[in-house]
Length: 431
Image (cartoon, rainbow, N blue to C red):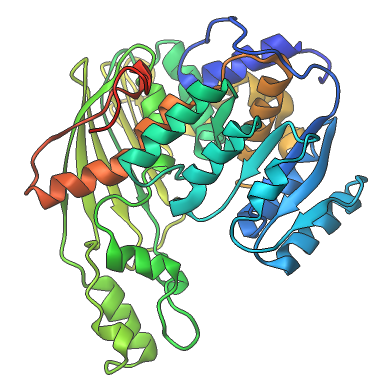
């Protein structure tokens, strides 16, 4: 631990940043303490590789094993471990379920899961049932049953689960959390958030055949990638702590953008130019909370649009308002005149303490340093045994937006009730 901040102080601050409040000091499980943390990886593609590299920014990390269907990817990750000064890990590359064999090892404390969304939840659950803690990439599940099974896996195993939602650790997001905690916004009443990111170029192979990204749009409907946008807003509003999601209503537009892109790139007679995605270009959802707060959540990965910041955020409080576009803020009684100011005006005063202290250490890690703070929170949670800052109930709730938005659209916009995941899987099983 760096000088100037004790481990418990860091963890408390990290939990406060991630959850919107300082979590209790109650120890949830026995921590690993000062010994090495032994990590295994399932999925070492682009994102998994970033997480391998970032973890070695923290002391006491060893990686005995990595698993990936792509032997070249596993070998590349093993080389990164060696480059960081570690022993070359054993690789597991014998098919899509070779992770089961890896989980039988007794020299792994935790598993980092960074695989395609449909299998992220099942693999995370299998790891915890095998006695390993888990850090899982987003989205952690795509069906309500997968959400519930993730909750069951934690409750049955007693293992720590953390969702790797790094947007919660973005510098601006943590600064806004600090401002909220200090009362700058007064009481939040409304938020807009969304993932607006033109990803059509990732939807097709060189021959024009659809990739997994395009197949999501072809086969699924609803908000297919909600956690980047909803995660920080849920924490700003104290969801799962002092408030809860009650219901969701969703609608989707026509689908034109994917076909237009395919026709322009591969020709109007190409089969991909004639596909009919179920998912519209833009999907909007409205979420109501138990305290009457309203959230508009948007999703669009198909439309042509520059995206300097794909994660949209607008906050409205009784005393202040914020817009991520342009990083603009207005604070009643402080802003000059009745006009927007740059968030930078308040950077010195409201910079989050963790970013103020560890910004240099975070440099060079993914997403402008956010990955450093996210992985550090996981490491410190394992060391102390304290509560996960983004726990399984958060993960299940945020991921449930995928199937709930689909259900609402298919029912003509009928509101869908959020399951009470926090009551526990044994209290209410899925129907």
